[in-house]
Each structure stands twice: as structure tokens, then as C-alpha cells.
Image (cartoon, rainbow, N blue to C red; front, side):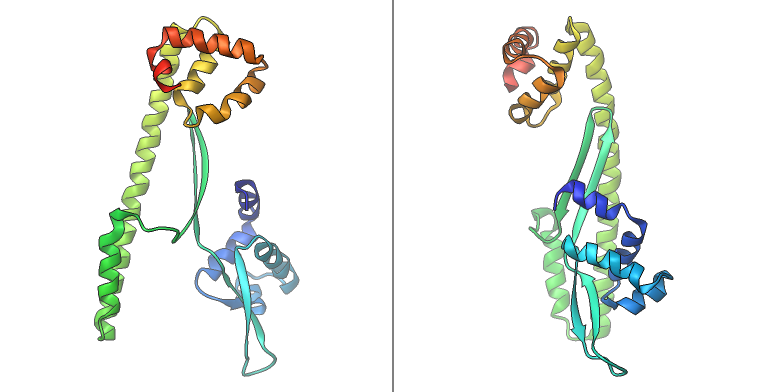
Length: 221
């Protein structure tokens, strides 16, 4: 699923409520309708969309009071990061569990030790402590990310002042800004030329001029 499709799916308040509810565990249609105070057809319409995009799936379970019930559950886990400020607009989607980084290996090892505890009461206490530890670590990461984005914005504004002094034209400034700040310079060159409505020859001439003016640009291209 593309980032655009995901944002469109998550942009609906009812679908968000459904996903939030299913995060607590599998639920059947009538159960969701009662919880969200909506009709079954209204809920079903959103469930079909969520299932189509692979965010949820379903299974049937026998019922003691009637025919088998169809339960819906979260099919995948992911995190969506949206960051935008001066000089930055980034939306990234990462699926959970794709890999475990070295920084959390100690937590993984501790979890494995907890799983070997035979006393259920003790295991609950240890598992809850691990969950609280992860919550604290996530909170620190979010604060750090917000601080880094604020610094990125400040750097972008300062670079703008420097480029205003170094560049003679608007085109020079925009191309210099792209070459200094972009993380994928080679891949975006065609897009930059199209956005600025300049020919390949003119683009190359400006780049060469900038390389002679700003050594950093020469070092990264």
C-alpha cells in the first residue's frame, strides 16, 4: 500500500475508531456496531475497506448461541511518522517486527528470560515492568525526534540566509538548496529541473557554477 493510500484510509474517523477497538483484540460485527454506536451496515462498509487494504483480516468462530461469528482482527502492525517544518516534509511507514535493532537486544533477551518464568504471578510483574520500560524509551525517542526537527528547521533558515548571500539568482539558490539538503540528490535531479522549468543544459551550467562557489556542493556531487 502506498503512503497516499494509507493516509486516505486512516483519514476517516470511523476507520480509526475501528482500528483502535481491534487493537484490544478480535471483535465481530455486532460487537463493533454496539461499541461505536453505529449501524452494522455502516461498520461493514469500513471493514471491507480496511480488509481490502490489508490492515485487518477475519476468521470464523463457533458461537454458543447461534451460527458461527465472523471476527475481525488487526492483520499487520506499523508505525507512521509524519514530520514537516522548514526544510523538511517527510512521511514514512515502517512495518513492526521487520527487524530488531541492536539498541533493544537487551530488552529482547530480558523478555526471553521472562517467558521462561514458571510462576505466572512473577511473570506478570516482570512483563509489566518491561512494558513500562518500553513506554519510557518511546517517550524519550519522541522528545528527541521533536528536538531534532526543531534544530533541522533552525539550520534550514540559517542556510537560507547564507545562500541568499552566496547566490546571484533565484534558480541558483533553489538548486543549491536542493543539493545541500536533499538526501537523494541524483534521484531528484529530473524533478528539480521540471519544477524549475529549465533545460538540462541550463541546469548543468548552474550546478558547475555552484560547485566553483561552494566547495561543499563539489564534495557531495
